[in-house]
Amino acid sequence: MTHAPPEATSMSSSQVKEREAAVQVRTEQHLPPEVRTRPAVMSSTYLYLYLLLLLPPLSSPQSFHWGSCHSPQVQEDFRLDQYLGRWYLIQKMPAFFAPGKCISANYSLSEEGGLQVLTSQSYWDRKWVVEGEAVILDRNQPAKLSLNFFYIAPLSPTWVLSTDYDSYSVVYSCTDVLGVFHLDYGWILSRSASLPPDVLHRGEELLRHLGVDASKMQEVEQDCEEEGSITFSQSGLSMT
Image (cartoon, rainbow, N blue to C red; front, side, top):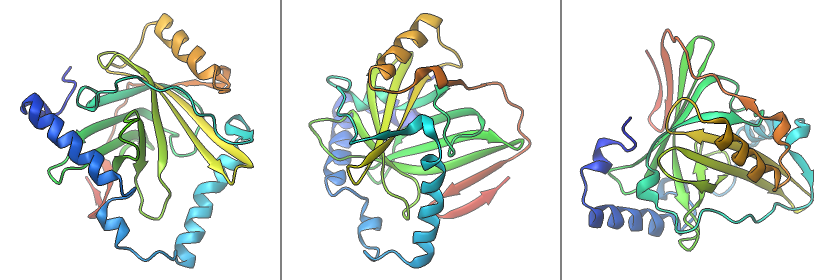
């Protein structure tokens, strides 16, 4: 399996480092330039949609905890260039935004110098693809990525707790709500459609240490037959 897209593998190590630095510099402003040019005041329609997005996880007891988010140790010396490519979701905490099967995420460096993320899942016999962008808010902690899929929604923390880049990745996400409570999720991903039981167990233990109820993690089926695809991107909606 190819672990990185063609544009990443064809570049020299110095070029990759330059592109990686460009991603970090760009994301120091917290949002892509297109987002920063939008009005700061959210319209009532956008606010309504945002509340609809927020309500499902609030009703999900397995992701709700009192108090602020933890500040876990993440992957040391994280190498973004080695993390590029496709990752298959093997186990997940139940989440309203990931109800399907055959869930994966593909990271690549865009021509504009950003970090593109394409997530996909099979649902209702179709492949649903969402195009987003990952940003690094703190260049001293590049393993703490933040994903932005819809400009009306807040950034979604995506922290790489542990990875060997070639086979597995353990990811944690936590959203702090006014310091009163927080919502967290955990994922175990692989470069292939499965992982050995011992690797899954180590990933579960890592998440359990952060307070994630690993007993509620669900296995993600990675064998799907799809009749078409629906893609949400910055340019709009497309169907095939």
